[in-house]
Image (cartoon, rainbow, N blue to C red; front, side, top):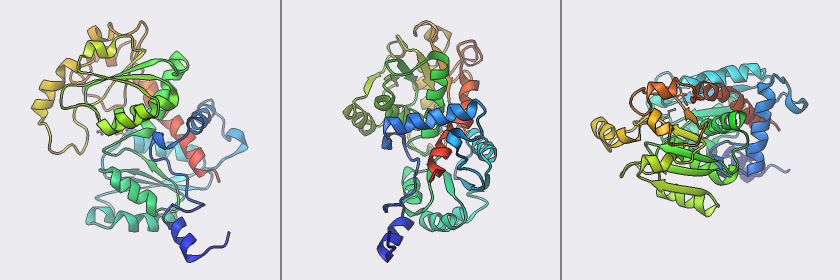
Length: 323
Ligand code: CP
Ligand code: NVA
């Protein structure tokens, strides 16, 4: 291809014919692409070093950029990249010019000259999209205020390992209608699970996200009744009642008052399907969104779920870094 100033600029902005393979949100993919990433994840988990004869991470560098704290995302990407033969460099707001107001666009252009991909955990979806627009290397969403797609890839992998194909099964979300449930909503039509979301008034998920998913064919039920929410569910999922960077809106006391009826405890799990499993992206607040008896009990899949962040992300990295 002839490189003109226009095409060079489009490539630089990540929009041209050779635009990088970003992983921004689950609903931007075809089901077959997501399935390919999960198949690669299983290959890596089985111990394959070069699925399909390829080692796309070998010799590559991933930048991990954090505007918010992380344990699982940071360590699983760092370890995963090392296992794929690559390395990482880690930046946070305090230790980089990000905290002093350098623009995301400038950071994207500069990082693209040093590294082969960028994992970005950011306060706002707009910043993620700006990074992707100006990066000429793949950008991976490591959590924004709106979504957490890497988490849901690991969650689907975990569900299927324990209970078989998720297509046609029922997932229940209890509590705050936050960034993590948004990615569950994005995945519903693509993976074919029914999703029931039980939240109190004022904590429902973004209506536009639900509407778009339904338009794409997703089976999504919204309710304010926690018992209705878990009825018949094969998997019950919850998350913190106060996400990172939650400013304004309800106070902690108001959140606790509104959300306490949605705590996932043994009595609520008993209303789900027989052998239903419990998932939580972690970090968890025992006796807030989940009882210790559930998260530390036999129905909990949270440690497999946390482990699968590593394998699922290796599948995502493989897909993004493959030429
Ligand atoms: N679940 C998750 O993303 O955890 P961290 O915030 O520790 O990365
Ligand atoms: N909803 C949580 C998820 C943390 C992994 C948050 O955004 O803080």
